[in-house]
Length: 281
Image (cartoon, helix red, strand yellow):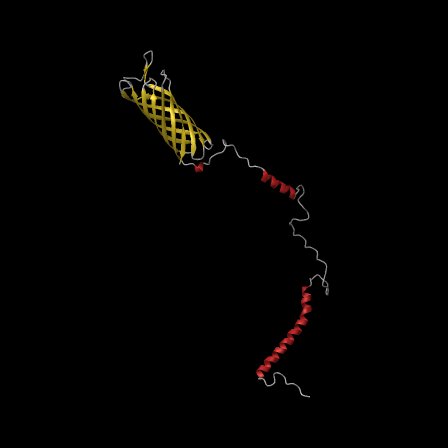
């Protein structure tokens, strides 16, 4: 009987040693796998299970920590949790309810968008207490304004008037005024104010036989109203009463007024109506 030669016969001794070591390692690995399988299975079993059992009953839940709320106990006595449908209904109600918007007269402008500087343009007419049937004076004016705060605003104005005066004379006037406006409700859309100030004016009067220049100094006071279109534009209406006296050199020897009893005076007064627009920068 002839045996087949081993595959490593005739090979170098080093190669034969490597092959033999690899076979031993493979054999040792297979044996270790078979022996380690039961140990791994036992390691996966819960510690509470009896030895040799693969399945066991669930362990009892751990006791809650002292002071922690018990989820099964519910809400404390006297307090009932709101149901989910009630919460959903409350949310839907809050979303469906319209937001109350104040009427236009009660809405307010933010003072932060207002500039302290403003520019006023107006037309005006003088109310005369005169015997002349055609006595009237009309004109236009312009003012620069600066707000010291929300309540007080300073006004420097220039006005020009022309028409027929108390005595029926044709006249034209140029007046420079300094006033203070005191707003009673500065943040409202419809704002009211009190106005008071002083004025200097110069008049050119046609007496028929010559033209004369008269000067006046006086004061005025009144009420005003502004209707804001937005934070920068407003319509303005003013009603003023004024009183003044002549200051030119002719006043002493040629008084302006003489009544039926012969009394003379250079003091006069009247009313002034204004309407215009206020523009804020």
